[in-house]
Image (cartoon, rainbow, N blue to C red; front, side, top):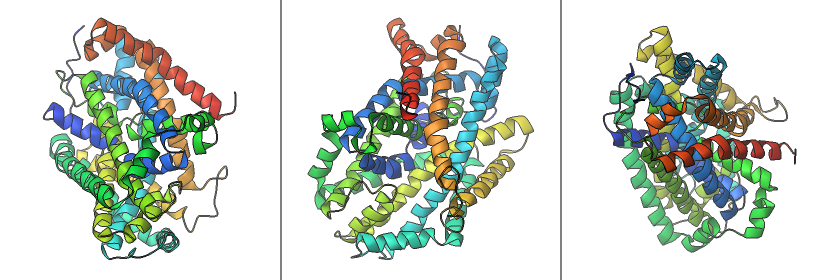
Length: 461
């Protein structure tokens, strides 16, 4: 069977490398530069890195291949792609819920992601203005807490970030998404290399290398600082899916704009490899500064905004490089946010017949409104909780710990067991041994790994 001859009404990437840049930009975001270092710090350093890399190789790449092949074969938004494939191949219509869940997960993530991205935007003028010079971690913590305690300021920066996302997505695939990533991704790489070079010269680089790449086997088996191996694995699989943009429709919809001549397996390996390398390089930019000034790496979500900022405040030329770091963080957040805004926008264009500008405006406004609840949960709504979690924490748990892994599980089951094998063979164009290896992973290892992680986290065994 030949590959799908459908064309997307939204257009197509100008080249294979435009797709790779866009998909890598989707994958490289706050998950790499903000979340990855602090999750590593909370989970015992190298012990977490080992488990994370195993999940990227054995689970992340096979699922990414599955998402891209679905997107390219369907050439529509995730919801309409699943609807079309179910109709064409006579499969249960219930599988369309996979598309809905991915778009919903992406929308929820966008709403609170924009709030956190707003913190990075706020930190650019704060750092450049010398707010953290000679300030200890306690003082920086007070400044960060002060920012979180000002609801109007949080909503302002959240609004600025959503406006930036709208400005890109409303312009379409070639004029918006592709033009943005062609500028933002090289700029991001350059800034990251500059910061690693700074860490090598001014920070405790050797200590950071040991922390990231020399895991303690005993600590690994015990689950590191996560407390148990199950908790460590759940954190690793959630991080792998989040940082690779899996389970939220972004990679699927980007795949729908990919040329039929471009290799899905090669592209998937390049994207996952670049994303993982950038996460590790981000660790080498963050931890040398943290260790150089004697601070602790296990400070959670405040690692970048408190601990690292205090480190920059005590380092030579810290204001300059600290400012560059938060510009980098803002760029990374932007490239990811536009990708998770795209599936819902594409769906509205396809199903409502709206212009892209109108569809993007509706998605941006809805995510902005929901994001306000996350911003307010940090201050005026801090006394409100569900299951012991504030609104923003609940949204993060719901998406990272449940929806993204579940979305990956359903993609694996659909591609491996429901979609006709000939479709996957035609789209992937792998040799027989390689295709059999991928099919074994997507049918057996991926579902088993995700289910076992869920059961362990729930205390079933």
